[in-house]
Length: 458
Image (cartoon, rainbow, N blue to C red; front, side, top):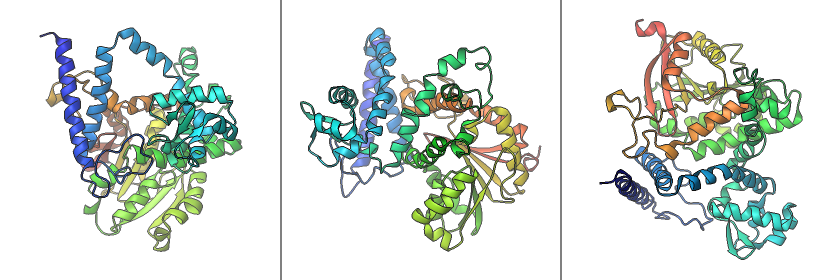
């Protein structure tokens, strides 16, 4: 049998099986059983649920298989042309976000003429219609009649009240998309290209700013930077909700920690994960440490509004830190480092890990919660660090786990760093005096548990 035909049949069967698993999961919703239509603008009870591991796996398999099937059956030139032109999609999303189009359309759930949308968002009518049609073709908004547009299930995520709109502005607008447009120029520069200095990134080239992104977000010398930093912190709530980052809240054995165990969310921004842990596990006391501006926002804005009970019962402590210069609070049971060291060079990451190791007691554990990059080549099962996707899919799930590769390039553009493979993390931890204890593959991201090297008998 021809291999290509065989692959097509296999991919179709995989798609049908994964779709069936997802449909069965949605049927478990008692108030709204079934997968919602893309035209549905009402929230579904499972929208913010943390998918069970089997469902996370099914979604990744489905996304990977659909993309691989299309790449298999379409002509190579057609597929590549679509890839070349895909750069305009984030630009159109940026127009929608800046123009608050999803908010505008809330007033007319059955549809609003583009001429009226134009008046309210300040974009010329004909050009706006062209932007919206591209987005509709990607299932963001819908054209209910000629030149009449309405919200749908995806565009509702672009409401200014939804935190994901903030991460959308960060990635599809400034600084993310602007930095991405300078990435090629930066990589080909004989001085900047080989460097991993955080002040020689595509972000720096695109803005003229001469210091690392995180100092820009502190806003000490830029009001715009402060605004974008606050927006990014809010956007991370939307990011975490969208990728089920709270899987660490459900999949790690927090309940087995003793009563009064201290969990320090280091570099945790506003502390979204810390809030989730506080609410779910009464045995835990929380610490939150980050740069001064993020801690100010957490202490004065986010926690008083979202989780005042934690402040009232003294189960949360806020303390600023520059992890590259100082150690966190001493002798915590768990140090959680989520999406932090991916923003730093190897040298800076080792320094940060060393500072955490200095604070750890003999019983302390460090949890590094990051994307763990997988290679795209298949290896024997007994040699694979993670579950590989079923044949004929790419072993790393292809489009099913594409976010880790997008984010790898995003942090390259913004901070001159990147996501890492498991052996890279182990190498950095070893240099800092830490040793790997265990790894949890949570589907989207991975948790690596480290202990002080001396405790492991080495």
